[in-house]
Picture 1: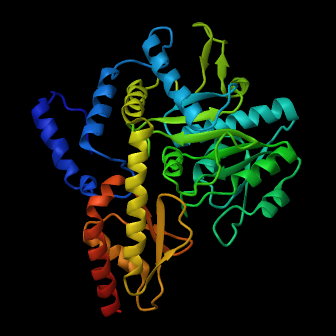
Picture 2: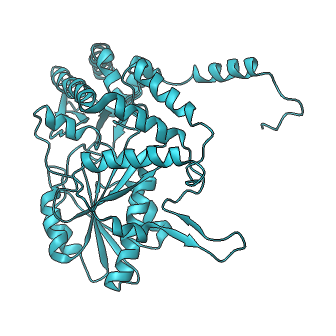
Length: 403
């Protein structure tokens, strides 16, 4: 068990120990890790790191102490509002990640429902594919989540969502796209339902928010999903995913900034005076805000379009390559950056293939329903794709031959 040393160790030795520890990690720079890491170029990574270090010490809680951080945060939120179809009444919050963005969206909807609809114990209705962070937030906030089955194409079933609504329902939660299957829920239809029933609609675009608009600019058929869809009240999108900022960077955008009052926490019953935050956190790292600002301004629409071109092209190459391997089949649809593939051969257990790929130092995700391999595409995977497909074919044959 580690204990605090009596005498400190010099940094050069500690740095060597840190680097040795990392040797056990998957080789993400080599494209062998399709989750957790979002990497485009070493130059963009350097910009992100340097911007972070410029604001390494500053605390985003201290808004009067650090007006520079307030300016950075405001500009990042404004860029997000423009990107995600927010109108002149929209507002937003910079958060530590998708979980906090989702938490704050649900907290805002809960307090809105209590104040404006008189619902004491509000409920959330959502498709089964919605992120677990919604249930996590509801657990902490004393709310109930009702999940309903999906259509055969893995999208939300409007009729089942409507049937699950009762007099305590305050929110419908939808994904753009959902992480389990990589498909968009029918946001326009869900928006109509939310409008009809007077409910809060939250769109979870944490995964694809900073990819989908640019894939659409390239001509890919990305469905409407953002705040421009009537009925959408809030949207979450992670900048530390396909926005390529340092981790700890996400946005919650509200269609009406007046609803920020339901997100806010205020406390005055102590000797120091009034304490107010719009986030769950108190002290907040300013470095991730600076990183997001720098990366977004470095890339612009043109840079993000180029990243989308690489990702979507890699998706097409992956799909074509998998379907050339005897016994495997890609599960359709694949709307954006997630690809699932399964085995059609009873002599090839897809989980055994995944385990064999792991032995070859590829990090492989396993989908439970359907039983499949789950790949979240990243630009760095493009350079490793030929090796991935060659190893995948060899692993399939190994599993088949050892059945």
